Amino acid sequence: MIRRWPYDYVDVVYNVEVGGDLTVKGTLTASDVSYKTPLVSASVSPTVGTGGSAGAASTVLAPTSGHVGVVPLGGSVVFGGTFASGETVTVTITATFSDNTTASITKSATATGTVELTTADLFGIVKNGTYITKVEATAASSASSTSATVTVSMWGIQQ
Image 1: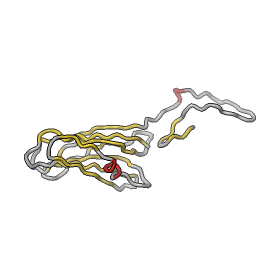
Image 2 (image 1 turned 90 degrees about the horizontal axis):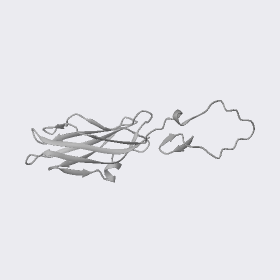
Image 3 (image 1 turned 120 degrees about the vertical axis):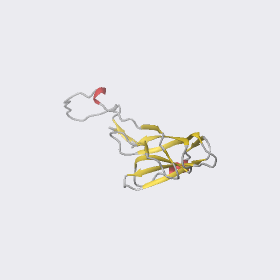
Image 4 (image 1 turned 180 degrees about the horizontal axis):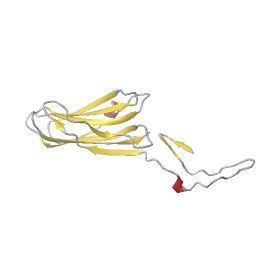
């Protein structure tokens, strides 16, 4: 097996030298190998809560079977729908770590548009010595009712 960061998978091995006796007890074919997909991406549209209260959380990133964590590499928040005069919509993106602690970043808008997550944003949701078990997004409007919408998209690699 050849180790490739951040995940392991079986790769082609060649130039193998064996000294002494070698007994082959079976054959490994390509169909016997399960490759893990390291890339993950998703888009979610969390319900926008009103009166400053966040709506229900939507999971943006989580590792698939065979992986333990995700490393976010980029993302964006699209603010859509119709904003009322003076309305502010705030999106909170929260990472949950393997030690059950969390870190969050927020993005706000007063009109429709797209906000890209910066490197500084992404560094705001990582923590040394742990891995991210999930990334969730919530949205809240300052208005008592809203027609605003939010779409959070993120992509990364799995560990």
